[in-house]
Image (tube, rainbow, N blue to C red; front, side, top):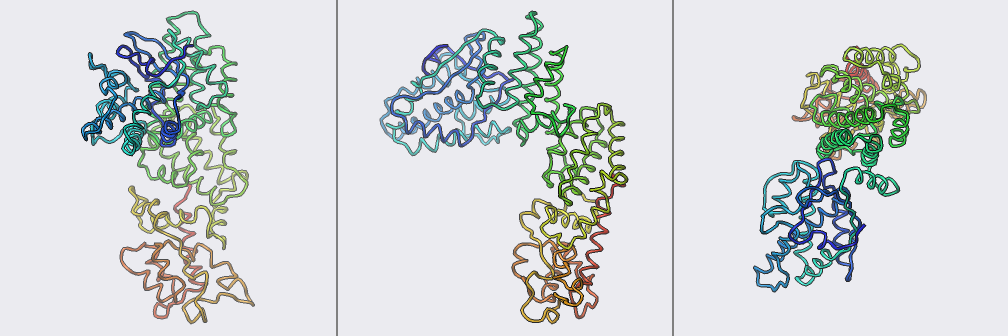
Length: 577
């Protein structure tokens, strides 16, 4: 291990750096950049940038195995600082630094014109435009890592624009003279061992990173055949290259995807052990460890492809699953479906079933967990093709209909929950009313939806047609039924729980809701009939007995309540899956 400075590390005009494709792309966010800048502002004469691990390659190039985030940030720092000092010189300010030296050391070899530092392949062209050449490009970032690159440069640009030349030169000297330690190895075997033992001993890494280093170490320790070892390592590197390319394209945490995959394949489903411990135990019990590792990594790669496919899908029931915010239930099944090469029809059928059961389980709430029932399917090793997956879906539907243990999510239980006089503020109250709106559109829930759920959440609220606080005076005189019936409580809107039942609830814009408040029913009804409003608002008149003297009473609420119950049975009809 050697102690040196950033300037010495870059070794003036000779050395180049490259991030291998199987390593993580740039991921520093505003928090880390702010901390970097604050550290510079607070430092006096010394700055420490930590430890770096490199693998030596041909042509005096070092492959960055550990420390790529810090080193990428340093290059962005130097590029932004040089650009700002160029601007200051153009304005007539005195700059003592040799700006060509900054370029030659950290950005481009002046003699050869070559890049001193290369990021991962799929980001490098963007990195060249944004950082190396400082072009004012209108190109939109294609990955999250490219967004991070642009954001980091922007933050440095903004900080440097506010600083004096003296401060900029001080910060430059701090970074180029920053103390580091490096370890340069000549083989992937050494790199894997050092990385594994350095990072699997308390340093915070993602579980995916821990497993990657562990897998590589196992490959090196399992064979004396160097050619075969290199071939197996190359296999892992290629798979992780695909994984990291996909990570930056999906809005899903990498360890969450890893957990979804582990639940799909571990044999314990939703009650799997911690994935790192579980994988290490599984490898220890394998006779063919390397084959198991390769299959497992290929499966992780496929799982990321599945997540990407799901994220890109326009199929309505997959979109609806995201609205229900319970993808931890769905993803292991989607991964299972892709592993058995399910057809698109079967994949989408699985999505429709999962939306249905997720709605039922969220509607009911309570202790009964659907995951324990699903485990028998998730862990079924006999699901190996399209037919067996369809058979499993059929089996689960049959269980919901006929088995007492699955009966928590039967039609009867679903309607019991919808029937509740306290349906208001159920977790899925707005989701049900949104689906009811699509049902009224009578277009089989088209995509894109006429009324998007995201717009509904942002712009709509839930209206009590008979208001929670009745109009001052006689409710009957203001067009509402009896609120409190002392003799027969269940006939009163309030004490009979009709106030908060689904028949009295309706989606309405927040501004519209505020404007009508607890006004007389006739005033509300007139506002419901205007153009460009939801169908569920326009149909309220249909439930009123006397159109000339409209009253919104218990009987009107009950009529609408029953219609919505019928719609629920049709929308979430298990026989249609």
